[in-house]
Image 1 (spheres, rainbow, N blue to C red):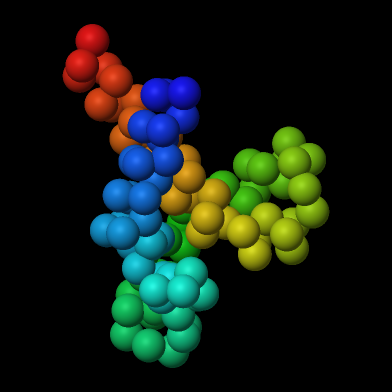
Image 2: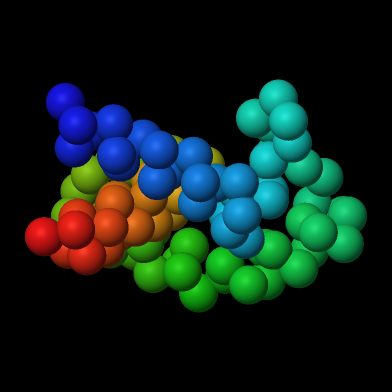
Amino acid sequence: MLGSLGVQLAVAMVASISQHGVLYDGHGVLIDRESTIGNDSLSLTANQRKCLVDALYQKKVDDEEFLKRTVFETLVQLAGVRQALKVRTILQ
């Protein structure tokens, strides 16, 4: 219970401050790709997105188009888990 709560808190924090999280507006919708924030954030995450989609596609997790559509959420989730693990390591 506490572990999963920690991950959810970490995901929320990462989403609010990371280059992945700034791609969403207050309603959870991707912002306009033509905006300055959208363009900068997309270029900052290009390599990460391609690497993650390629890796998951090779593992046959899902079809490539679905992976491309959900890659931002996946990156935020992974970053949240990473931060929760860092906190757990520090507290031990």
